Image (cartoon, rainbow, N blue to C red; front, side, top):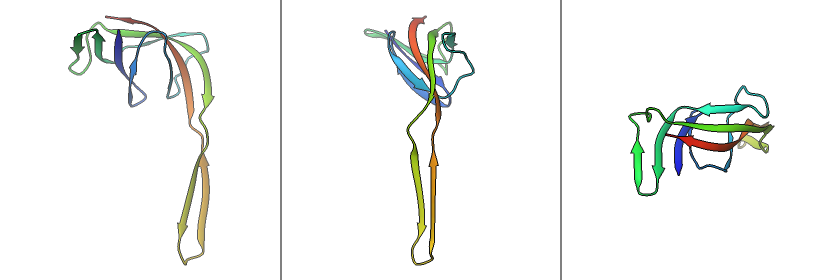
Length: 103
């Protein structure tokens, strides 16, 4: 069984037992999180699509950790103008373990 959920402005295909890194969620480590914006639920050959969400479906997950991704380096340069700019960015994330898909 699998589902497509929307969180943090992105869509993820999830299945029970998987680990997933999503945008930061305001939850403590060990807390249970319910993702209720389920766009699709699939089980073998049967697929249920939502318009836009599947009614009565939810994904239960547990917060494993909070962290930061690897650094993304940004370098801007204008040729012949003596302009160079270095910048870096590390995005925060929340790691989830998918427990079950209801619906």
